[in-house]
Every structure is written in C-alpha cells, then in structure tokens.
Image 1 (tube, rainbow, N blue to C red):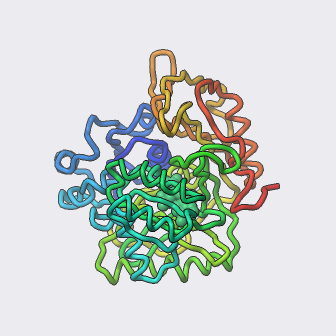
Image 2 (cartoon, rainbow, N blue to C red; image 1 turned 90 degrees about the vertical axis):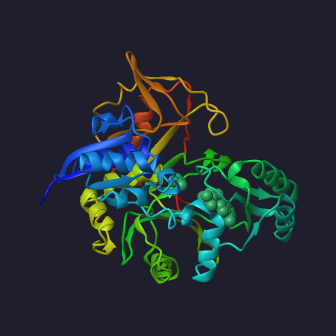
Length: 423
Ligand code: AMP
Ligand code: GLY
C-alpha cells in the first residue's frame, strides 16, 4: 500500500492523541502539524502555519504534495479550510464549512433535528436578550441558555431558576458568540458521547465514551471544555439500538438527503433521559478529552480510516476496540475556565515510561528546564486497565506521581459511568 503524507491541523490534547495514533500507521511517510505543539513535535514536524488561514493551508498542500489533511478542532472548519484544502487537491478528513454548521450554529443544528425528527430538547432561537428571557420563562427558568456561535464548549449555561436564567442570558448576550441565543428546556440524565467517522454513505463508530463537563467533583461548578473522560462507556445493547434508530440513522440520512457534504468526524452528545436518549449537541470534530481516552482503545489504523472517510470509501460498522478501558484525567491551570493562571512548572519525570499510562499535552511549553503550563487545560493523563476501575486507579496513581502545583483536577473521574458507580 502506498505511503501517505499527512497534515494535521490543531495543537491541543486531542491533536496530541491523534498525532500519537497516526504515527503508529505503517502507511505514514510524513506527518506535519500546524501549529502542533512542543509535545506533538515528538511525532510530527510542527509548522509556523496558521490553521485558520485557508489560502496559506492550500499553498502548503500544493507546495508539499500533502495527500491527507486531518482537521482536529472546529476553528479551521468554520474558517473554510476544509473546502480550500479539498480544492488544493488533498483528501480532507473534516466536513465542509457549510456542513460544520451542525456544530458552529446551534440554531442550524436545532432546525436540522426538528426537520429530521431527531429527539432533542424543546428550544427557541432568540434574536434579543428580551426574547431569550421570555423563552426561559416558558421553562420556568429550568433551561440551558446557549450562545449560537462557537464558544469552545463554554457557551452554555444550565440554569435552575428564572433569576439564574436572566443572569445567563445577560452574560452570554454580551459575547460575540451570543448574538443569537438558543434557550432550551433543561434535560436530566447521564451524558454519553458517540463519536463516529461519517462519509456521505455510512459511518464507522468509535468506542462509546463519557466526558465530565463540570469543573468540580460531583458534577458541580461551571461547564468547561471537559475535565476527564472514560471509555468504553458501559451502555446496554437495547439503549444503543434506540440511539442507532432514532439518532444515528436519521442524522446520516438527513445529511445525505439534504445534500450536505459530510466527510469527517461527527460527535453526537446524547443525554440518556427518562424519556429516552436525546441529542444535546453535534460537533463536527472529535471530542476533547474523549479522544485521548478513545484512541488508545482503537484497534485499527486511524490514518487508513481517515483517508477512506475522506475519499468516501469507509467500511461502515462498529470499529474494533481493544479489550479493557481507559480513564483520562484532565489537569487544568488554576482559574480555568474563567481566568486560567498559566506558567506552572510541570515535573513529568515521575510518570515517563510508566506502563499503561499515556500523557497527552493540551497546553504546555518545553523550556530549558522542563515543561510549563501554557493553557487553560494543560494535560490529560490517561490510564489503561482491564476495566474502568483498573484504568481509573492507574490514571490517579500517575497523577499523584506528578508535581502538579498550580493545576486543578477532579478526583472523581470514572467513579461513575453513565450515572452508575464503578466497583
Ligand atoms: P452543548 O455544548 O450544547 O453540548 O452543551 C454543553 C453541556 O451543557 C452539555 O454537555 C450538558 O452538560 C449541558 N447541557 C446542554 N444542553 C442541556 C440541556 N438541554 N439540559 C441539560 N444540560 C444541558
Ligand atoms: N468534550 C466535549 C467536546 O469536545 O465538545
């Protein structure tokens, strides 16, 4: 099989895990990352290339005969980079700018779900703060107030009273992402992440996973980009069948019937409510930190899957998963998500080379004396084990061997899975 030259866009923890997995492919002949990171540099040549600049990415593809572009985050999708990269002749793992509105516009996603009769929370798209406050009253203040535009997972405030809802509307309406607000009924239940590769014909499903969105133990505190993940999420077969029939199949059929060119990762955030599974959100990319817990379990060649998906030649079905489980704990700078204080010095020597422990860097810099924290989310420490309990024990044992002064993390990642305690 011929070798492939790959350009990976992004530089966070998810992209570190993607680079790590791509580097294991026997078909990889060259991996570039833009911008990449000091940690990704172990697997890829990092480029001073703006991943949000369609013309610059297209020029690099042409000049270097890049064959596959793997788009990690949503920014390049929203900026039209997937379209420009396709025009430049590369295979692109990442949906078109128009298709990625499934993530980048919550109002677009809600309309799509309504048209395709996909179960989701009742909602109102509101052009003004006054309209949003009126909508919140229809749910007696028990709602989720969402900025319409992309906000890195931080544009959602879940409220329990009319006063809280009014505050949430004022807070989000003042942001650029919040020019339109979506106000929806508040759903209850455990959350499940379904990540798949979709290619206009079918899809290949990765191990199911679960994120931990809230900042603090016990699912308290503000929503974050994600404070930890576990995989595989122990979902019963019957509920999975319901999700396939009511969510996955109508989503794919909807994309195809509506002529939406979708070749890339699709993330479906599902809440398992007492009335059945309902979609909270779509993302047009893989999840962070779910990817860090899911890719180590993938028993297949990610490069080959992404290339097949980009070419519309994906073999549909459930992708093979290694036995066992992974739990990933995200370490974030103190002050995250509002105002992270970066610069903490990180001593990773206690965990380097530990069996069944993987360290994915989200926001770090390498200095002459070691690593320092350079972002809100800093590291995801992943433990692997025979089951979730063993994986969790492994991950926390590794965290305890790190010197993590200046970082915060949850102590209860993987203590429950889909709402049930793990032995
Ligand atoms: P989203 O970006 O729409 O997924 O929202 C981020 C997080 O907010 C979700 O993962 C949930 O934890 C929470 N959330 C969003 N919508 C709702 C809802 N309708 N009811 C309860 N929680 C929600
Ligand atoms: N972990 C949630 C997300 O990637 O959107």
